[in-house]
Length: 318
Image (cartoon, rainbow, N blue to C red; front, side, top):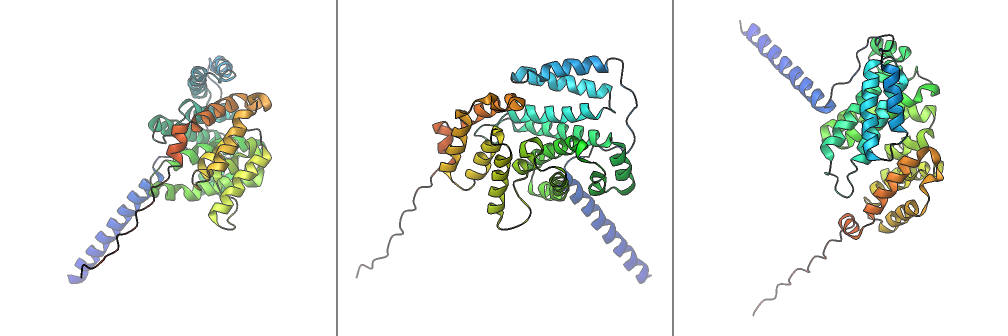
């Protein structure tokens, strides 16, 4: 009888621990993945081509924030009508990232527009996951193994876009999460980062370095981070996001105001059209750089703490 009670208590303890582990895993992930492990519907809907053409038209004029938002909505409708179209899923992921990064740019205040940015990054991440799953070799391997590293290994350089835009949205979404969720996503981010480095580290103007913040795990983290940003700049010096992010994320963290102002002034003093394929992005980057260099913003980012008053020395009266 006593053995039976002890066994029941042990089972209850085990179930409680399993439930706690499940709850912890859910809190770490923070969002359900968009993988379904089944092939998307074959064949586009009747209006898929028309929706794609409309979206492309708005996208080509995305330097206007309103056009960028229209393009995003149109790409969402187009992908809903043609879920097997990898290119549409990739562009939808990119459009979500673009609108979050530029239309809802936070400026000096990281809390500004935080809710819509998080929602856009999450939607972009889901679109990227669906685009990855539209690749049959990824889908089958992932369904059989539940191992994203092995599934990503089945994709070659020609299919890097789906990996990159999934990763880009995942990075930005994770950065704004609590410590548990960042920890839960750390290994997944590393899997994607490592695959991008294997395939083409220069893809999208050195984006894996610009977003990843670290090189391979050599040396102190601040040195590795600086090397990564400088590697991105070496790959694409005229893609302004490389310099702006270096200034905003590294120079501010290291309290290096000289580096901050130098990089952002380079952005402002260079023609946005110097890199034709990235003109809209460069135009927005110049606007962000100009806002960050405003005196009130500089004072906020590089606030100098008042020197502590010296402690009063005790002097006996006798």
